[in-house]
Length: 225
Image (cartoon, rainbow, N blue to C red; front, side, top):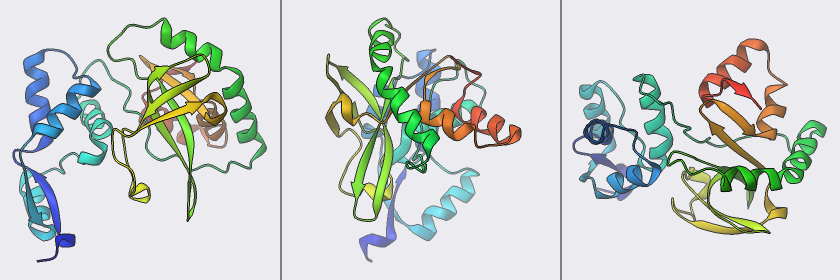
């Protein structure tokens, strides 16, 4: 059997493990806790049809281990768990040549000092500051959000917390030391209040009211500061 036909399956389901651990903890799991639980969970390799049948018998799809923080927050949101934590953002596809998007890039650059102040003034465990950077691929450019793990006066250290198939040469947890000039955008979603996120705002302006509401629900944003 070719390895290409095999997929990892958590036994028991990763989402069930996370629910159980969070219930025992009595408070939301942190990003680091979710990653540690994933890395230490029992996994078996199954043929894709068998894995699909198992998912059908469970009645739900398990969390994608490559995007476990995002998927876990989506499950928590569906279960009505509080507080509603920021899941981060998956791939953002935008026309970077658009005038409004160019202005968003400029606004993000000019406001980086404010971003640093927000990071340095916060001590909450669930705080999840993000930066957006550009990956140059053979098939084109891709904009990705990274979790900020360190700051300096002239740049940031960002960590990949999701890896789409297009970034096959990277892994979750890869870190990047970035100068300010490499930052396309930044954002902090704190209890539903969106700080920064200039490219998101520019994209949001192109949507109708219903689509804007859908985007806000997806992001867990109640208002923009």
